[in-house]
Image (cartoon, rainbow, N blue to C red; front, side):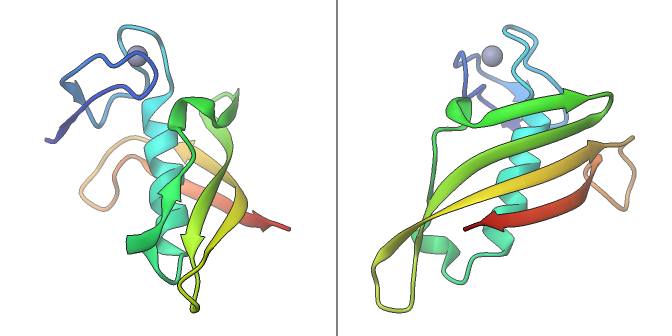
Length: 110
Ligand SMILES: [Zn+2]
């Protein structure tokens, strides 16, 4: 199980399956799910730079999180384009078929 650092407070060696940072409560799993989903939808993911995770906006309703942020993504001309996105992620129990979340919706904002 990979260990990660909290993007908000920097606490080290947190399980990537943790819903929240044990130190500051940052919603780690929802953030990583949102960034993974946006990365999958980029044409040139290797060139992309995401907004600092702790600056993305998160709202929570039960086990459903809405994450809003931006990514500076490469385009076909080698230039960077800032794209805003909103991802709705529902955290679920972890099993062999998933990483403990489901993406309910994803939208690029114009
Ligand atoms: Zn933290």
